[in-house]
Image (tube, rainbow, N blue to C red; front, top):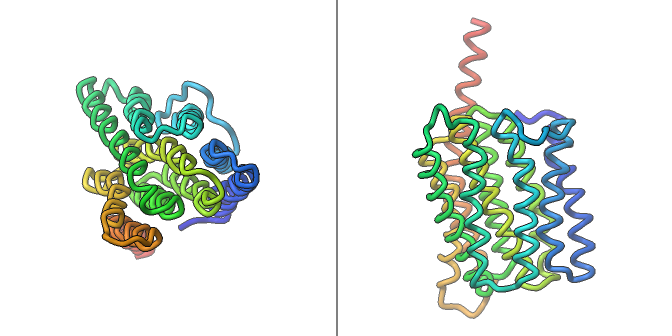
Length: 283
């Protein structure tokens, strides 16, 4: 269960920091301000929950998520400034670099072949997802597109939390919280803002799931479903209707169903295991 520190530092602080920066960006109509707001909000939540900043070059590979978020936010800003959706997939491919950095501390255990295989898979997944988001955003709208990313990120945090890593899970939930205000205020900026946020969020989502699998007990099935879930925005984008909100809503519902399909059973299994352990203690 989440305690008071988890809720305040892991959820409220990312929302507050992101909301402030996103409101300024929306007021000034700075598309690049949205990925910046999401990145700073996540970093603020990370540092607040940890009550410190991990040292650069951490021995715990999962702590690289903090330092990786900085260049990934820079990629999101650059993507929004360039405003060329057909090239946005290049920034999504940074997911592979994130996977390599996160898995390097495990090189002696995993072997280089496993690390590079995972890296290539995340390169393909990250590039494909950002391309899909760039394709669907004009057909569904920024609100529904970013809401889908928020749902996927939140689902990843919950699954990781329930799979044996409270720390990585809380950070995943913080990242989802940071995406919330950006999602709500994105309508005030150009479409490039949503693609820029995706260029930041997709590699970070891939990094969380890779860390969740190799540092916790997230299964390959859960990893694949959660990472691929934003692609279901295509379900709505292909609907033969002129109403964007209908296409966006259908796409978001499809993403939510996929995320819930793995998040619900995983959280329920973790709850039953915790109750069983508590029973054994007091038996």
